[in-house]
Length: 362
Image 1 (tube, rainbow, N blue to C red):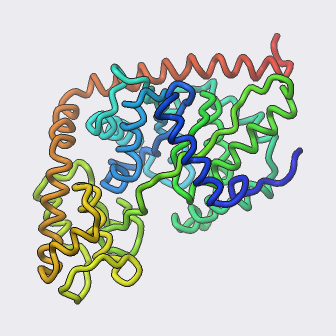
Image 2: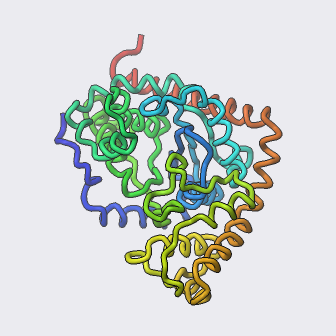
Image 3: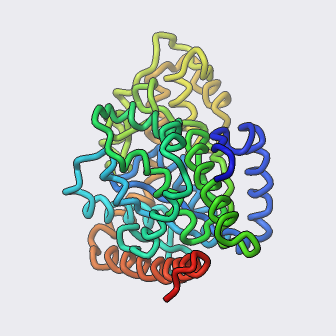
């Protein structure tokens, strides 16, 4: 086995940023050179943090013509959630959010599928697990953080092998670009390591798997309405995409600000106010400093009013489309069935290649 995994993502974060910048520039010119793998776990509907942080970028890449696999990671819900009774319902709600935001598998090179419906891909787990050690899985910093944030005391083996399953999800379709935030780089580095070790061991002259690169998010981390933690449905500090305009207004009204009436953009000393200004900026494309200058002594009341109007205006088309899609469950099911069928075709071909180089063809 080759050297230990460098969880700093093959070098410094600055190097990852530079690689991401070059890929971004090339995608605009050569979109078909890439295959993007992205997705979500079906633990509930998406919120505005997902929308600004990843969903808008997926739509942008799809519209550029980049082949895109959108994975609904239903098996991975079992690693740290007991709400398996809602997986099917949550899966369909994710598809509604995707489509309402502008993903269109009928017109774009996009495949949406749950990975439990692609058994050929999941067969890659066994050979991939032989390429990493228990110690390497235990040291993964992202796994440690997920265990801590979920408050798990009895950690099942699925949690430790979660990053290997992510490698399966990326490599079965030979994804070579994965949109991630900084905190997901360790997972991606494990995928790169598995791809490299597989190629070196089984097919050094004709490598099967690419070593995928990170496409780093340009959107800053979006805090919840409490202003102190990342936006999350489980923390009760999120605005769901499916919320009504009145519900959105009520949630923003409760958002935390501070005692200073003069609104300024100061992420370090005034994180709650800065977060609300940044959300307005994401809607209007104005600089948060300029928005703050407009509000001035208008205080938190004017800040919240401006955010409510900007966010409801931004999400109005999405919400209208969402209502239409919710009334058509047969179409949602057809999107998933067609996506799973296409994903299986890709997985069958990859598994055939893997069996061949491992000398398992009968």
